[in-house]
Each structure stands twice: as structure tokens, then as C-alpha cells.
Image (cartoon, rainbow, N blue to C red; front, side, top):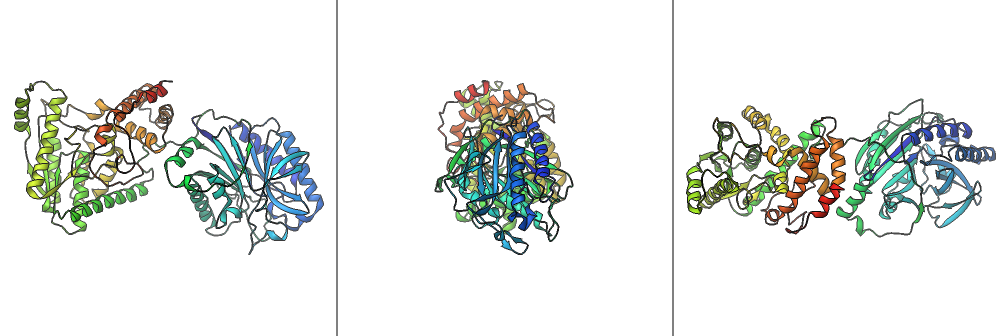
Length: 634
């Protein structure tokens, strides 16, 4: 399903030194995972015997019973295509190894030994086991099956799933084995663990798993031993964690007395793409790994994962506040550097009372505050035209007065009429020419004012408008420094809200946020906005969603449609036909409007997505969109 695969982390009820009973619990969880369409389920370290069996590992009875239990498990799970990864003690060449065994449909696919054995404080594994970190290209016989054995195993299917396995302490090592596994193509790492509980350890453990998933640019699935382990000197809480590229998708509640199984749907298609487009992943030197082919695993029938309908906006309020502060600081310091370098003391801004010009003004004002520059050197120009309403104009005026900037009003109506007459355009023809003449008149006023004052024209256009080309070429498309050029429309309102802590402007901001988005270029009769942008070009929350997945993950249009349907299903705002309609519009505008992006002005990058031709996005202005539209239709 569009590259999504469901994985699980399971913690079984454990009885130390009772492999048969432990195998029954594993079988129960494995059947449950299969019923839930799980591709791979992970269990804790030394699953069949219990991790704390200690010197009983030297006992022949326990090892034989463990192997009998494994044989029983293989037999009872033959019909199950879900892959299970569990821990066993392996006796090989007179040595004991702490290993992970990978099984599917009653077959053993491979066995991986633990590389790093802890031997300090409460852990003393070297008393029983030896490291298998140098074992490669080996095959052993277990339960009558010839099985690949070593730390050089990767398990793969259709080049979409490729996973590797490490065991507990391996993750805590300076150089975890998962690093090399990931370099060689593993997009999921599974870790069987027995990590005891100490004050603060659970939080550190989750952070370790999460950050390793980010470092490996993949997913990391972790399962640790539960409360059935011995409490002679330690207590085990049974911690399960599933993380993907730096974000934890799921983790369980520890200290459960019952079996636990958590699942998460991993977007492996997205992870594979990110390795192509981000970081220095491809620069790493590959080593030799054996590839073990796995059979078909259960397919997801229905996606069970939160897809953020507003991916540019943090879902946690505290993170929003922090994010907004970061954005404003980046904008302010970018502008400070530009003005200082050019020895310019004045900023010129076209202020309309809309979202974009409001943020430009507020962030510019912040820069002047940081540098203790005179706010009077911010020249805000409101330029009413044929479509300007009193609501937007009054908000612009009030905001400028509250901030103490220099406010000027230049009515563009007369200038536009002169232009109409010069080019022979009928004033009653409200076509694109009628609109663009006004947009270019405003830019001309701003540029000429900047020349006269020795100032810098600060652009107001945002990332969403740049993606759609929703600007007049050499009109609002152009400035001397494009301050908002990397902030999408859905995020701008949250950044503006950040400034509501200033009580003098809070009520003005509220009304600006409540005003419909409009270029206000068409005339009106009753002082009401008649030209709402989103009814023409489409909802910005959809376009921002499309942009995010199209640029960041290189997603196909059909997958973007699938994700959008899932993301917006709870709000019931858009049906499939509506989403598809605006997705077509997005693709058409994104391709046809590249020529505007090819010559866009400088502006500070603030997030992971930028359309600057000098930084992140290089695209020919005459690229054909046909195959993207066809893929969406197919």
C-alpha cells in the first residue's frame, strides 16, 4: 500500500527457564500480529529461555528444551507469513552465542549473533557468551535446516523492505552494527533487548532509539524483556518502541503483567527516497552483506497511522511557540545581515492588511528591535486600489501606528488608469491585465521609494504562493529581499500569532487572521472582499500538503492523493474528487510557473523545504508535467 508496511514490537509473558510456556506466549502474539497484517514482529532478547537464566545457560537440559520449544513454534506457525524475530541461545563449535533467529512460515531464515557483550555492574554476559562480531559468511545446521549465520545478514523483499538485526548492547556501542546495516541498504533495524529499569533510563532509551533511527535514515524497532524476568538484582519493565527517522511512532506502557504488542505503519517508500535526496548517505562506503530473500508478508488493508494534514505546523502547542520563535529569529537575523552588509538603514514594505505583509512587517520590526534601530526607518506603504476594502486598509494603518513605523499611503488607482490608457486597455475589462497592472504599479512605487530613500524593498510573498506562481511576474513576484519566501501559508498564521504577546497589537492580529485571503484587485460595491484566493486557486492547506510530500519525499501524485484522503478524512472537509481536482491544479501550476522561481530574489531558508533555484530546487522552466498527471489518473 504505497510503500507502507506494518511492524510490531511484542513483549511476551516470560517464565525464566520454561521455554515451552514461553513458546506458547510467542505463538499467541505471532498469530495476533498476523491477524493485524503485521509484516515483521520483534520479541525481546533470549526470548525462549528468559534473559536472566544466568548460569543455567550452561545446562544441557535448558538448551535442549529451548530447541524443542523452537521446533514446536516453527511447526505451529507454518501457515503464518508474518516474520518473527526472537532470541535464543546458540551452541556452536563449543561456544555459546546470544543470538537472534529470524523465522517465517516455519522456516529459519537466518541467525545473527550479538556483537557487543556488556560485562559491568548488573550485566555479566561474558560469563556465559562470546561475541559473534567477527562471524561472517558462515552457515550452520539447526533443527535440520541449513541456516545462514553471522553479523553480515540483511533480509529483503522487492527492494522495498530491507531489514537488519542487532541485539541490545549493540545499540549502546560507540559504533552500532546498525550503522553499517543501514549504509548497505537496511531501512529497518530490529533490536532484541533486555534493558532493566532505572530512574530516568526509559527516557534515555527512547531517545537513543529515536536518534539512531534518524542517524540511520530509517526505522528502528525495539523490544525489551518484561516483568516475568528474574528480579534477583534487576527489574525489567518490557519497553517497546517504534521510531522512524527521528520520530517515535509508538511505544507501550511498561510494567504490564500481560502480553504486549504495539504496531506502527512505516512509510518505507518515503525513507528510501529521503536517502536519495538528503544528507551524505550515498557517500558512505558499503561493505559486504549477505542478502536473504523473504517471502511475501501480510499487506496492510487499512492504514493505521496519523498523517498530519498540516505538515508544516507542529501539532504540539509548545513546539509551535518554539518553532515560531526560531522562524522570526532566522528572518530577523537574515535581514540584519543583508541591511548591514549593504549599509542600508531603511526598509520599505508594501502593507496590505493581509497575512503575508503583516508577518513581513512584524519580523522586520523585530530585526530593528534587536539592533536598536529606529522603527521610523521602516517605511510601510499602503497602496489602495480598485478592490481595497476598508477592513484591510484600517488593519494595516492600525498595525503600523501601533508599531511606530513610518506610514505612507499611495493610491494606485490614478496610476493604473494612466497605464490602462497607455496600453489601450478597457477599464471595464477585469481580466488578468487589469489585475497585473495594479500589482506592477505597487512594485514600482516600492522600488522607486527604496531608491529615493536609500532603502531595501522587503518582499512579502510566501512559499505557497511561490510554489503555485500566485504572483504577478515582476510585480509582487519581485523584491530586494524576500523575507517570507520559505514560509508556507499554513504556517504564517501561527508565526503571526506569536506576536500576540504584544497586547497593543493583539486585537489587530486577531482581525487580520480572520480576514479572507485576497489580492483585492477586483472592484466591489459594498466594501466587501469579492475576490477570495482560495476559491480561485484552491485551499492553501491542501496545496501546502501537496507541496510538502511532492518536494520532501518525491511522492507520486497517486500517493499524495492517498495520503491527503487519509489526513483529511476526520475533518470531512474534502472528498476524493475535490482533493484530486486541486491536486491537478497544484501540479499544473507548479510546473508552468517554474519560470518565476528561476529568477526569484534572495530570501532566508527557514525550514527543510525551499524552492530557491540557488539552494534546494533546480528545475527547468519548460519541463513537461504529462507523466505526473497520467500517474494521478492511473
